[in-house]
Length: 563
Image (tube, rainbow, N blue to C red; front, top):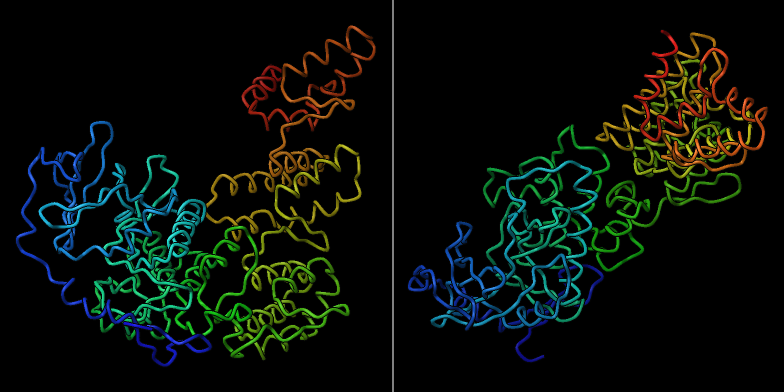
């Protein structure tokens, strides 16, 4: 192990930490900025033999000057370092091997007057610094891109060490982002090698272990979490703090989340910024900071235990087994699903205090929620179902399915499709079930929990519930509301008529002509099914027309009937 020193393991249950003495020995030499290197290059200067300088960019940093340049066909960025030994050859070589749309491509390297030069992509849209994003944009666009970008870097042996909004660029498509700036990045060999050096890290985004000069791939994910916080809030949790204050603060894991941030995003950031890395190599222990695999599962909708949640109280292992219907459950998410599928039995377990007692010894937060539900049920007679329903989503905020009184659906669209199929089959057996959903306004409550920023879906849910109230007060047939719910939630744009699948008004007209050609009596019967003698549209026809965007035509029809 020439030029390497083995010390006692810095992380429990992991192989010994390896310090590269060569890196440490060269730190002072490499960290010395040369004043002469800061001379601005004039327009027309050629670097790396073929890239002509156009102008200096205002975003130049303390470690390097950035210039817009061109090879005659495409614009690039020339990064001219201010230190002759700033670029780590092993990092550059690893970067050249990475082919990911989420990592800035290193096109070429060279020198200019003895100082390192890198040719990088030019991102016309700029960085994410100074911008805020909705939760939907963060979850849909930013999280998957950064996760894949970090995975590509870590697979290549690179620890970024300075991930933050200014080092994340918006790509030309406006829908993806890429990681840039590897000036202080380090190359590590093997998954068990931990690089210990001093660095120009940014304290606001730095993991607790980095203040002790310990850098891991997990450290990048901590920075990822703080970055997401800033992209949502517009500031970091540690703004205006001194480095020593930040070091003390992060060591106890107390990120102050704003009220407008959903529990879902709060949990995700908490998982990325979990302070304890002692279990990082123990995949069976969920008390470890999330990295690529966990983030990928989370974005795919897989329920996961948040580090320090429940198990943190117990110290180790999964949730103690909870026996329900002769089966043991060690995952709260799976237990919630079992309760939802066996509704009445689940309610018995809750309201007899069994669930509260179990979680009290394992997760105080869940125990408090269960006890609050018990107390509410004792005060609100006849509200057991709605109280139980709310509790399921409190125990597992990531619950994607739509559950009610023993019926489970993977999503609202799935529920909508099921309603539509029942209506097509003239199956009225679940009409009381649909009415209970609408009477309790479950659609609005579910959307508020699952998609709080989806204003379109909120309005749609409210419109369905308003239709229910109107039909109920008028004492009219609820099937119109059920069809409205089915088409709205499912996104389906299909009209089923006499077994025929009709997708457009043109197809409907064509089908009616074929019926007329076959039999006038049958045509007349069809017309009266679609429009009754008072001029009222068939429930399915009306809601289908609304689904395909013919609301104005419906209003014109009603106006003509009133004339």
